[in-house]
Image (tube, rainbow, N blue to C red; front, side, top):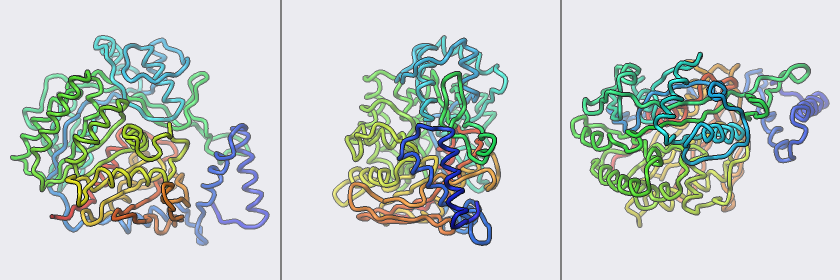
Length: 508
């Protein structure tokens, strides 16, 4: 978009808002103000787009750390993802959209339909356990044979391992329930211990829905705020709904195998995920297994940093246990998105926990407050024997890397690399294609709402901005959001993997 001034600019902006009102005549004032924001991302006088300037600036920032990892061990959830259109599957099952309703556990096709409608209407990602084994088997059989259904490496651990293994100088160990189909899909650079192999794969169904197409006519340059439609239901943006009947991952069966494999493999980084899969277990089994998990994680040598990748959860008691007295003190790093961050604060009565859900792009100041609280209340300090010193937060429009000072380096490269891969992987391109991406992050924001935060402006030529708060550093960068994403599954895992690849931990 060119930089205009005077009447031409005013007329253009009036036309823009008029077109938006034509699409959504009942938008509230707060939303309209947000829609004016992206107009501020303007081209340079030389005509280079803001997206192009930002992508070029990232390339200068993304450099390997002085002490890179050489061997990374990843565990423990792994499966085969069956990726397909959610609407097409539900139609194939003979279901029609009705009222949406969230279900913590799915017991039937009707529960599946209601939960899918609920999250598709919000444009939010979610993951749920399907309790009926035979019903899930029948649904997965139908899903696998539908036109367009594709099979991919799945599970946070396997996805992170697969992404890291793309770097030929990095050796990756993967422990998880690896069946024959998954083993076939894995990169040759991924080592799977024999004890981790099983005869049957675990399947997860990934129901995707797409963003809307552009409007036509005089407003054809506007991306329609309405997304994929299913009768009366409209998705505000592209996303996915995941469900499975996964007993191996749900019981974290491979955790002990994983930890016992570390002595021989000798990793210099451990990545752990899959705790969210325990939600399908009873409360009694959850508590018992979590205690066993803590004992196993405690056996990992303290000189090896551990990253914990969180995922969608609905059990506040389980999340609170993981955070307060169980897992957080044992790990050095966390990876999470906006849904997990807010749920974490709600589960422990943290800052802004009265917020029921995000409205549009998550407010940077609110996110910053919650990240600060996690590291202050549950991270390493002189008074607390916790190892937690790093959080990589990612949402569609921007990323924030928060670190306790003195423990991590190369943060600019880490957060920039995480944001870059979000744009390339979503568009299925090797490099950022500036014609296929757009900036949706705020160009100005407050760094806090709990205290007097600073107002920060983002310059595409210097896209990583920093601020500091009581011994904690924050690194923020916008994301170049893919306009027409090819695949939304595994983006968070790719982001965390790439951010970790460029991170450096300081020895103590």
